[in-house]
Image 1: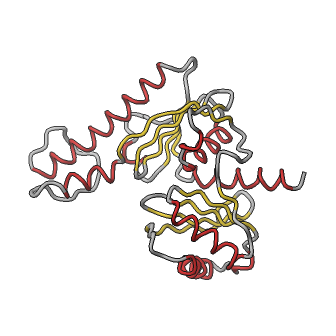
Image 2: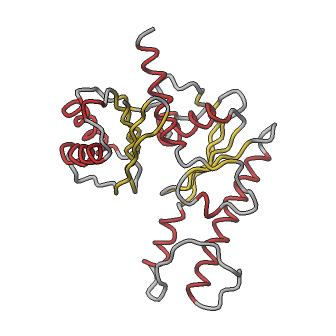
Image 3: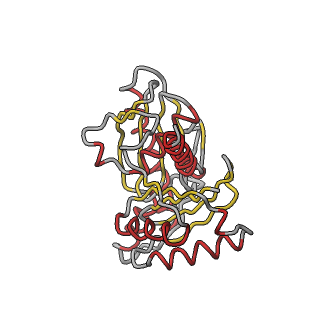
Length: 258
């Protein structure tokens, strides 16, 4: 079984694959102060709860945008799973070509999404990931990562709005019944929902205008279903990043035994 670990700025997702299928998944808050042993104890408890023996894990792959946690998880993999983790980078066999001014600046989460998107849906493709940041990644019909756009994430934008203003409350993003709010909460929901919807539509429209062929629009991230108005996305794939980790792992292992 494969343990796939996706380290984001806000959350870490642990998933166990049996073949191509995710059989267990857990999400926790990202904590740079935790040691490798502490993460291992969390994972061991999670595996035990799902009826999985830790000895059944025969491979580990990590994508991380938080360098300090990456070091802890690499150490944990060797100590607890007796496996040297595969760490996602642009230097691996990805199945796509990265056309980025400096590939080392490219976040591994975006790499993994592009790999999974092209493998699952072909190209051309725009992948919208509604995470801590909202990212737009563009893959050509030939499997070339062309670049994209990065915008402030919906969650952190809403949190900043309430944290930096004395009288505005915290809200959950949901589609309001009207664009004209009749109270402060409704006004905030209208501004946030339709504001982010407009941002996503505009960026997608402008990227499309620069592509020679009509792309598929694939969304991932927890808020994709909420913001998907008027069939904004062709597909919503909440496990896209995890699928990409499994695909990359399989390629690396295949190369190893060629």
